[in-house]
Length: 139
Image 1 (spheres, rainbow, N blue to C red):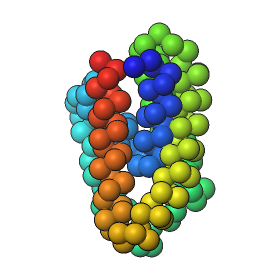
Image 2: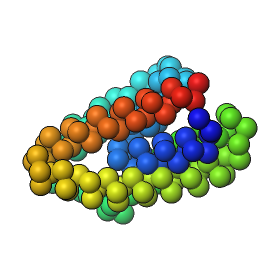
Image 3: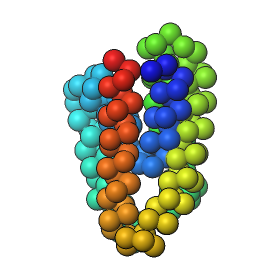
Image 4: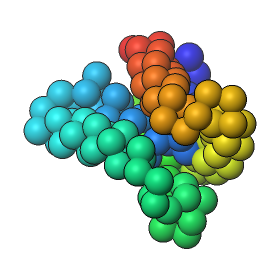
């Protein structure tokens, strides 16, 4: 998979779940303490997301975190592949915006059909499977 496409797609995953793409990328490519810390953060995020009073992913804090995480994923993927890291960062951040707003719309629709918790769990599975598929296609 071309690194620029991967940067955009990992950004979309980051828009769904801030730490999932980062955790998968580091667990596959750089296993070690930092990767395990990111994995723990992703697990914490899955649990935290189930609480109804959690701020929206499109709130200023949530969206800013997703933009930075998406940009970092894009930068990391393109820097190691020889593509321009600035383009990867821009695509990763753009993907995070797409994932945040698109994911919120999809989750609201899913919640109206299957209720909130199953919709959240479905989104978790999609984020994890997507991140794993993208990262494994990079190697």
